[in-house]
Amino acid sequence: MTRHDALLRNQLQRSVEGYLAALDRLSIADVMRFFAPTALFIVQTSGICIQGASAIKSLWNSFFETHESMRHAITSVIVDEDNRRC
Image (cartoon, rainbow, N blue to C red):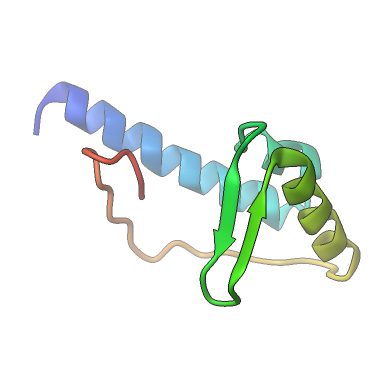
């Protein structure tokens, strides 16, 4: 693994960790920092597909209003450097 590959892998992993931490804090402002204005958000387990940051924000706001807390635990990470995703 080159230095560049290691840096990319670490950046991708930190992004996932930061996103999940923002969800656990129920911080809509922090969660939305991870979405581009035209983002496509898909929840494959429930068939939800939402386009655009404002629609995604609305989804998370509704979810946060009905939940007192949430907790994500990362047990392993697989990084696809070529496609820039975890």
